[in-house]
Length: 224
Ligand code: UTP
Figure 1 (cartoon, rainbow, N blue to C red):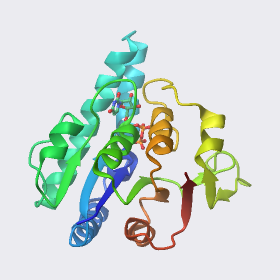
Figure 2 (cartoon, rainbow, N blue to C red):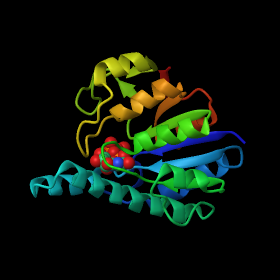
Figure 3 (cartoon, rainbow, N blue to C red):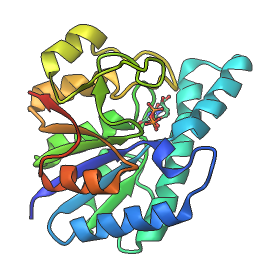
């Protein structure tokens, strides 16, 4: 069975409003996908993680401690998803090697160690499992030429090369809670492992399904 890895932003799980019916539909989609593919779901921390990180930063905590706060939140979000799925792991693995040992149709996890985000965890699992695709489900419709939340005329990019992303963002981890479409160290893995990578809006389940199954979707393809 082929493997697909999806990294789902924490904001898709819980932001200001809880959306239980959306989560039911999301996990129903994951179960449908798992009939055809082995699925790894890596869950992010989103705005809740960033609020804890902001609090810790105001209190003068060091960067690794701020990352650990973020990691804890990703694991809480992962626990929500895994309990809803019912057919995945009960406990949340703390490392990618622990996750890779689990012989289950769907494996759900959050973050692992400081100095990267869950994007890197997803890229690492995709590399190690030789996944057919790595899907990053975020809260915007792909990568834009500028921030679509700030600029009305921002244009969605249908395709972008990994080299141009690395030229623009680099491959060094910035700071805890930094919220970009894909963390910089993950870009290095995508290039090295030549991962087929899609960026899609995780709230648009029809588009997410297309991206997960490799059909044309509304979002951005990273060319490797
Ligand atoms: P996320 O993966 O959620 O990052 O981890 P994000 O960029 O804010 O992504 P969205 O909004 O969910 O899509 C939140 C924070 O937790 C720490 C980092 O500080 C990260 O910014 N973290 C997470 C780690 O240090 N290591 C990990 O493996 C995962």
